Image (cartoon, rainbow, N blue to C red; front, side, top):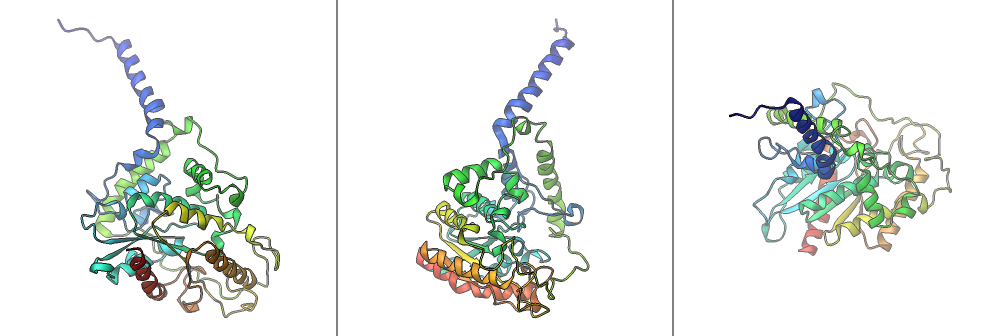
Amino acid sequence: MKEKINPLRLLLKTTLAIALVAFILVPLIGDSIGKVSLYNTFFPGRSRLPYSDYPEQAYNLSLYNLEAMFASHQVSKHNPQTSAYRVFILGDSSVWGTLLEPADTIAGQLDRLELTGPGEAPVHFYNLGYPTLSLTKDLLLLDKALDYDPDLIIWMITLESFPADKQLTSPLVENNSAAISRLIAAYHLEPVLGSGRPQERSYWERTLFGQRRNLADIFRLQLYGVMWAITGIDQYYPPDYEKAARDLTEDKSYHGWNPGEMTEDDLTLGVLLAGKQAADEVPILIVNEPILISEGLNSDIRYNFYYPRWAYDQYRQMVNEFSQAHDLNYLDTWDIVPESYFTNTAIHTNPAGVRILAESLIDPVLEVIQLEK
């Protein structure tokens, strides 16, 4: 005789199962749930990390689960051609490629050059740039990128990524507090970053209910993979945009500092050293990226909207001296792109500007690869 179902017992078992998943299993799995992805299997991997303020037009969105971000990127695709050299490029929105097609980014243009290393092995470049200016954000991505076997890391930098007040304000940093705390402890960054810390997620925030937004974003990213596969579009390109300022103010201050007040301790140079330590045997080439050098009003006081001349000149000297003192591979390309090639900010260039930068990196990249292999 078939046993009669007890509705109350069934309800209790169902409730317990849901509670087990929501309050125990999901917190235990944590961010690893982002590893489940349709990219690089059903859909091609993305050329750059997911980011967008206009998801519907870009077939892309901003999310902060590092596992999901990397799982959607072509860097995570298994490459049977193990002899190829893998070069990862980190940095801000100029590396990610604001207003640029994927093929016109620094990684895309370098990849099109079809460079070869020792033994005629191909050199492949991967765009791991991410908008927002923060060295600590870059360190977070560098640390994660090491899971994907780079042979060389190019780290593009600019002064606006160095002030301490920029380090923990990137949403990517704020939403990966556990990883940031681990990096701070591992590389003794407390004196560099100061007492500030991203707030750790509570237990409730790590449950199924606390992660509703995170899980929904991961799911939406999979859905956008359909249109990415069909169109190759991953960014909204406005029909017009406001050009970067050429006529500038007379203000000589920078982040509250006046000429003669900014010291090496005010800039988080130690994060560069933490990157070198994290990479260990993987070489890093640090590149000071090109900036707009205005010829307009008050250009004798400021290079551009971001930088008074005194602050940027002092920064260049500090980074150069720090790199020499700590044996960092450093290349300064700050002035190689003409003013007219810059687009909507003092660090974003058009494809022709990117091409100039790409060509300047060929010899340094091949030199590092030759030395390491």
